Length: 307
Image (cartoon, rainbow, N blue to C red; front, side, top):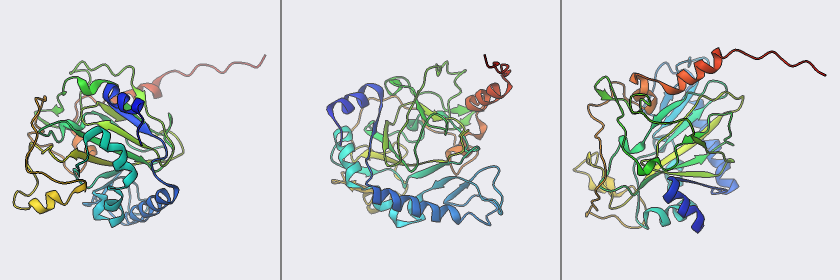
């Protein structure tokens, strides 16, 4: 699935896009299952363990911004996590023994109002004993400049782990001014439905508001090498079978591999739990909201008269 050039790009830039990873019939089933899950938001008045709602959601006009732990909503998602074509792409990057870190999530950027995700590093949420950890984004829709594409800072996975705290607690986002993080030249990732993006766990990334009339949905899975163990511990220390049950390729191990990697623990916990959108509510300097306001307030130039 990956060429030598793509493997080199992942090492240098911290990301790669793989075209046509999903076969058409698999993509069609993914879309159908997702539409079924989203439809279940009708009538809801608050978030659920599976559905994270937009601020503008109403029971009569349901708006979903994230499907959390989609494997709890439908078994198809858990099966897709071990999709052979994805495993073939990951093996050259993190080895033959691969664990699914959690059940994944689907970020739903609906047309004209899909929420932005502030700049962050996944590593800030779940540091491990080594950094053979990455995220795969499966595109359910075409992703381009107008519908809130994934934005990355190439090479940032080899830089520092930035502070993701605000007001003394974890918030899951970087205050770019306080951290002196230069985000003036991000790279936007484009792709067609069925393509996948792969990004390193330390890569700085985010995404802006969807300003188009088209939705942009991405299913994210987070994977780790089997010998990369979470520093915060496994969720249930008495249930190793559950932890090992997340293996999607190869064999588990009880021998963590230790690397000298920079770490900031995500503590104290974010005041608002449930999803990254909730975590980021307390960020003191919201970059994408500021950029959106500046774009709205920018004076429009008078239209040129036809010659």
